[in-house]
Length: 68
Image (tube, rainbow, N blue to C red; front, side, top):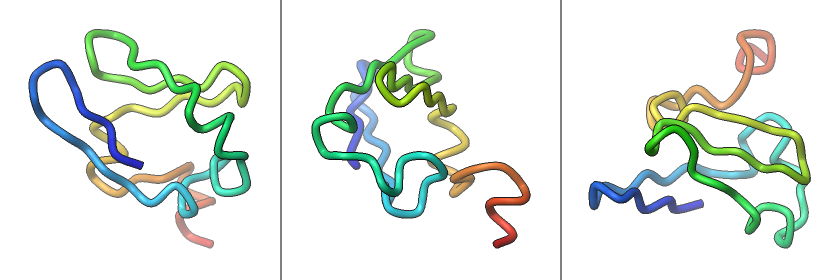
């Protein structure tokens, strides 16, 4: 997924590697909101939230998820 922020910066990450997004339908993934002046992403339909900085750093889930 590629997210373009208001600042002009872009963040991309592999959706298939992200906890709670890996098996989501394209329609659900498309309904993402950028929240908190660009610090977070929220998927209402999926009840999923991530920090943009964490995704950019390769943190795609909880410590347990990342260890698996």
